Image 1 (tube, rainbow, N blue to C red):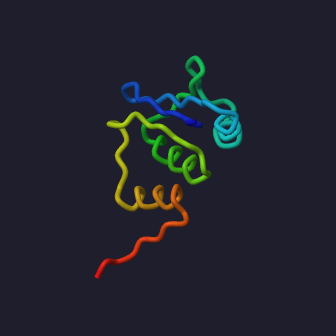
Image 2 (cartoon, one colour):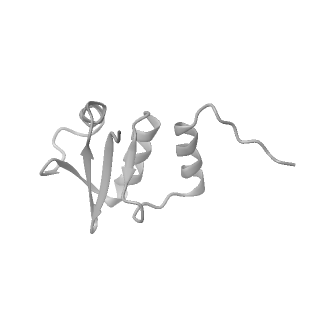
Image 3 (cartoon, rainbow, N blue to C red):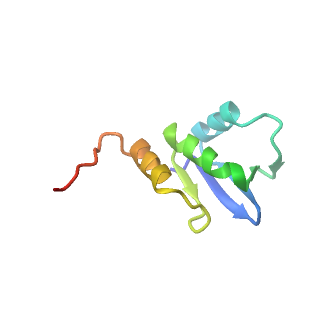
Length: 93
């Protein structure tokens, strides 16, 4: 089950919780006075990557509108490592 989802709406994003873990994470990591729209938390585009990365690093299952979020290779590697901590990258020489 997805804990948090992120969807792009122009220059803003909406973050929705889909689980108790997601609700708890929002309470502990997002300011209480954050703007909301319906059930979603409004996020400026400049903050969305850090929030997604933080949630994934904390072990939450995150779904992001696929075409909208671009990560650097380093950020992608960090997220992969957070999701798959037992796997190690090995050089194939």
